Image (tube, each protein chain N blue to C red):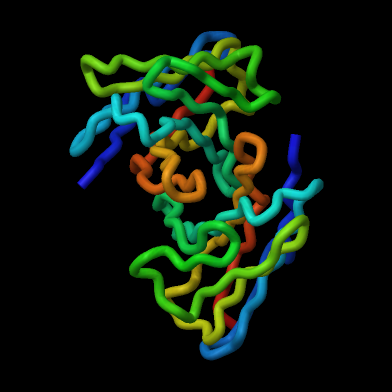
Length: 106
Length: 121
């Protein structure tokens, strides 16, 4: 099984801040990594696929990078509507989600 | 626009079998470009992938749940289903069905709204 370790588990930031979340895979997964945003009571929404590709319609303040075992998700300028929990997901071997990062406004 | 809708009992007794159905509309479940998956989320916790099925009926399951899970497909009804046996309180969660695109990075691109299943006597 491939384990995905996300950090931090929670994060408090101010509007306009640059926010970074990391995701580490337990083995090399190339770029087979996606990022999702989940708001309370809603299903997750795809933001980034293949580690760095922005899904159509997603604001450009969201970005992703990395390959192998280490990945980063960044919001360049935090907006109030970005308050949510973010998950990474690998698909190199079936699927595994990270444990999530809950983002709050300071 | 593709839509997925979960249905099934919201309350299941311990040791019994949880059964849910996902009805797909706006597209054919027989399309060869997708897997159809189940994911669950206990209250306040993260997402756990349960398993997937292809239109051919081929399945893959999360190793941690494999002994208790069965996913099946009914192409005539455009539905796929989940059965989870011998449930305990730990299986209490919101259960989502979702489509997995084979064309784009194995993304979960469409999700149902989720249905809460509580395991309790």
